[in-house]
Image (cartoon, rainbow, N blue to C red):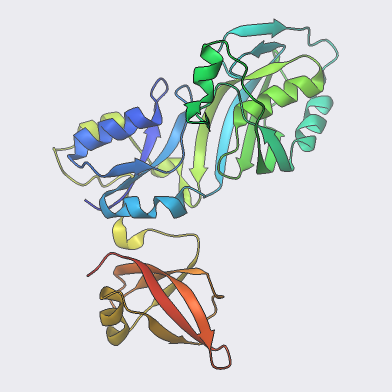
Length: 301
């Protein structure tokens, strides 16, 4: 089996748990995922199956869209509802206008603090392992871009329902924590659901239960993206028969009027639109209108 499997992840499972279950149900060892969801989070998890695992490096960088709830007035050590409460403050005086203003301040390109309870490693040790041992966890930041962070309902019972659109690797629970700090009352991420990964939407996904109900080893109809139709975040080039033969032998091809710049990645498809390879523009020659495209990952040999 080769393609993408769109799963609606339930709460209480790690992304690795989902991968392991999909391997068992599909009887396929080569399965990965394109962006971790915390155990308590739900929603869209994109799995790469078979040959498509070699495309994970491109798909994992896709922007994400979430919906969730932030609880104000209560802080936790993990920045979400799974952690231990470490602080409680009154929310008196916190208005909907103040919340929206603070969310706007958290929109754009940010240097975001990585939560102390996270899987990011320091000298080979995961940060949450240091935190659980009571050791000091060094402050680490990463640059992320938040395209949209806004409330979707009125402030009620100290809860802020929100919609978040951001780059891959953005910590929604850090945004919840930072929002609480900016409002002076603390806060944490109470719930999170991923709605979209790049062009893929949650409505397309299949549940693990529905996947388990399929005949063993069968290809699901819902939630399945066939290998040849996998969209990639760069241009596509349809080749002729002569170019196809060269690509399947790992040889470079010459392409006239190539729009991609030197160094750009390109999806290479055959005359029948079957997915041949992923390549890069190695150089441009002559007056620049001819590009040399070198296959880097060849699928059809």
